[in-house]
Length: 173
Image (tube, rainbow, N blue to C red; front, side, top):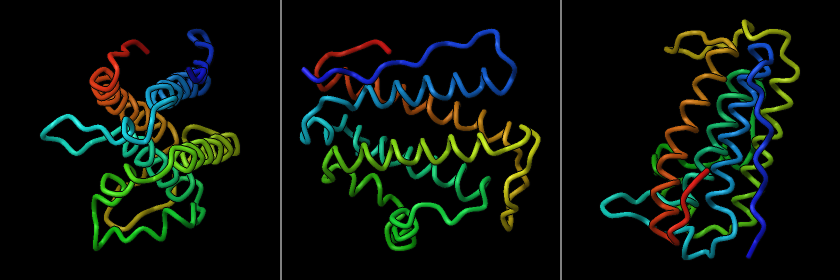
C-alpha cells in the first residue's frame, strides 16, 4: 500500500496569518490523501448522478489555487497549461478531462500549484494587501482569499470523503 502524504502540524495559537495558513494546509493535505494510492479507475469513480471524481477534484483545486493566488492575488500569468484550457468551449473541462489524466500528472499540477501559492502568500506583506482588480468583480484582500480557499477546500474534502468511501470504504481525515 502506498504511504499517504502526512498531515501538517496544527497551529491553534499562532497569529491570524499562521492559523489561516495551517488550516488551509490541513485541507490541502486531506484532499491529497483522499486521492493518493488509487488506481486510474478508482480516481475516475463517480457517485451517480454526479460526474464528480477524485481526479477532477485534484485538478479543479490546482486550477483554483492558480487562479486565486498566482493570477488574481499575485498578478502573475499563472500556469501556462491552465491558461490554455478551452473554458469557453468546455466550461467543465477539468471535470471531463481529469479522469483520463495519469495520477502523476494530476499530482504534479496540484503540488506545483500549492507551492506557487505558498510563495505568493509568503511574499505578501499583509493580509490586508489587495489582489489584482478584475473587471466586474469586487476587490479582495489576501485574508478573504485565504478564508475563501479554506471554505472551498472544506466543501471539496467533504465530496472527496464520499467518493473515497464509495471506492474502498476508507473514511477519516
